[in-house]
Image (cartoon, rainbow, N blue to C red; front, side):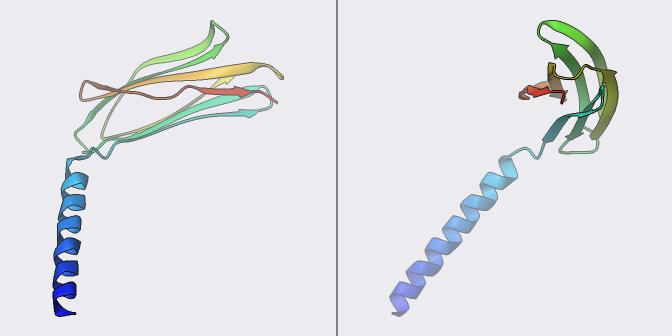
Length: 119
């Protein structure tokens, strides 16, 4: 029984160390895009949390209808944290896509497009 407990303790320590080491090497960057509608107004939002307060964030947000650009915001910049929100006119029953590009300290991050229909 003692031998089993000793082996279990060693395995637990090894697993804990490997999980800690992995977490220390992963970047803690959070990117949260959002698209919502209120009547005939679309609101595009983007929150970016860098790993450090000194991280240089550069982003662009584009609202499209098909291949046509409805509104575009380029060269949005911040350090450490970005909280962007702006509106654009839209029409009921039409599908829109919000596209986002983000780079932090010159490293581009992949952000999925958001496609929604204005109710």
